[in-house]
Image (tube, rainbow, N blue to C red; front, side, top):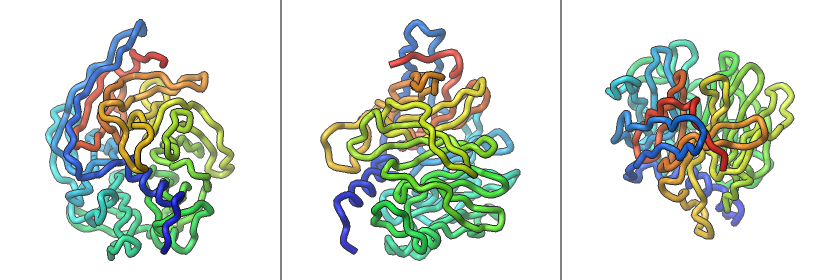
Length: 339
């Protein structure tokens, strides 16, 4: 298949958004300059040395569960001690420097893993889809997202006909799934039926959160990753009319409700400028942000090195980075500043 320039830029952009999952990077966490707003949050490394990290979630037991794509596993991390253990292993391994097990979620006490870019379009034989964890080393595919995507192509240009699914969230016993390459959100029912919720232009949807029938979505934005294209938007599942909530920071990769009902976003960092498509953000330029009520984003913590996902337990944020570090950020609600 001939690869169009626009399609190549979009594919490589998304590779840049989660970077090379195997690259050995070191996080140097730093608290934000909180200016005159309250107290700065406390940042420390809870765990390190994970491989191929991307998505995460807080499990029903209060622990943090993180995907390690390079090992084909989901790892459980104690949020108090940082002790980690293998929760599930044997998932398909990535065939290119992105993909494999990319996100994890729970429905009740049952874990599910989102696996992507392991199918025939990249020379693989595995299913791009949602895997139910049956026990420590066995899984059941409940939704073949890759085959749906192949037979229901998007309206935007693409190179991978099975897409690149990036994140998912439970919804009414099933899931909502973002596809950053096909620029859309899919719905999966309890029975595994798949349908499209909304098709975007080339905005690269990444992380999402769901409350009721409303979706809150992060947009990474296309090359050249202008800050104005990094957006947090919302829309209804049944009536998907998009409303912009905030913008102003490059490469937004996650969005999550946190303390006091506030909505937070995660920026991978600043665009390095006029560089080849797919280049990662500048090191140590990532930010945890809070969505304000005025269409703006306020900095909570800056200086993060290529973060990929964020989860909250009360006033504490847990941030996963590409380099395999898990950051524990305490006192999130008491600090922020505007750009």
